[in-house]
Every structure is written in C-alpha cells, then in structure tokens.
Length: 161
Image 1 (cartoon, rainbow, N blue to C red):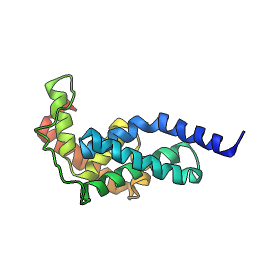
Image 2: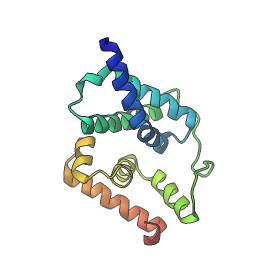
Image 3: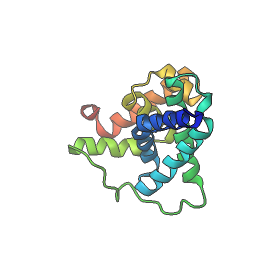
C-alpha cells in the first residue's frame, strides 16, 4: 500500500470526524453557507498541508478550531468579503422563541466571547483547554466566559441559559 493512500485515509477520516465542528465555527462568523464552504475548504487545505504535525487527536481538534476561527476572522477582514447580512435578515433554525433569542444573542457577542462560549458549551471544552486553544491565560478565559455569561443573562435572562 502506498504512503499517499494512508495519507488520504487519514485526511478523509479527519474531515469526516471534524467537518460539522468546522462548519459550525464558520457559521458563527460568516452566517452564509457559500462563505462557510469557502472557508471550510481553506481550513482543510491548511490541514492537508500540516497533517503530519499533530501529536494526537485532541491536538488535531484544537488546531482545527484555532485555524477555523482565524480563517473566519481573516475572511471577514478581507477585501472580497463585501456582502454583509444583518442578524435580523438571517434565518436561524430554532425550536422555541427563547432558543432563537439565545442563538441571536450569542452571534452578537464579541468574537473572543463567542469563541469561548462555543468551545465551552458546544464542544464541552474546559477552560484550561480553551486557554490552550486560544493561546491565552486561563484566568483571562475565565474572565471572558464570565463577561459572556453576564451579557447573555442580561439580554435573554436566566431561563434561556
């Protein structure tokens, strides 16, 4: 069996395993399926170019999160990113009005707060893990999470959290 076949299997498995996570991260920033797919491809192209550098599965997942966040930020700052869709125009799937309000409020948070909330509540990452992914001090991440929770409680109340 050739080396490239093993490499293709490894990359295909990583894409299959982490595709949903990368798309969700991209949606947090871009809110447009075409833009999400563009950035998704960029993330996994970079993954392909760096696939041999991962220590373990957790390192790989953390790396993908960080690259997805950074690629989305780069895309949002880029010259080509001209069309901006307001949050009011978006159609976000939700089950209840409270869930809709919570999702809308999370999307309006500053990017560092949005990232911490996503990693903590959706990816079930601990604060020390988030600090490592974001390359920030653990206490800084606790502060960011505390501010994000306060913002969410202020806007949607305790019942939605």
